[in-house]
Length: 173
Image 1: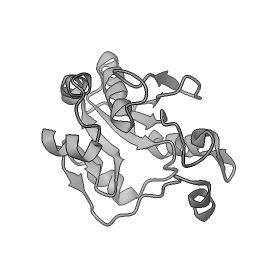
Image 2: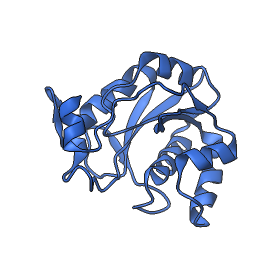
Image 3: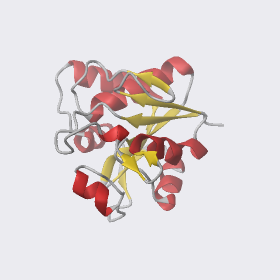
Image 4: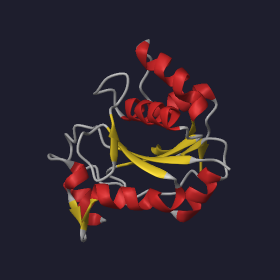
């Protein structure tokens, strides 16, 4: 059986949002709470990557802060390796819900990411050293490009993943 870690990527600066997106309220909870809830049914444990305060375990972006979501995925993979997990299911703190069909397709894969939202993906831990080396070498920080280069396909093009990059996006959710 595959042991999965759920990771919420939360290390961004939220420049377009204007304040801490993770703590922005949406309904009766924060965006971070919703993101954690979207992963919880599918994983053995949860971690928030890129911030020090969270209602679950935390881990830093790697190899350093401010490397974008790819640094968050690297931090999640390193945490997963240390914890004995086989793969990491990721989402972003500004993604409060996940389409069930997308989650099912990711979980049925050997590694994939959402075509329309590459922060949502399933990343096998075998990629941890590859990604760490890529980032340490100053490689391109595009999730899509790196995933393509290591053979992790984009799946379900056209499936929209709710996202709140701006306060206006949040109001429209």
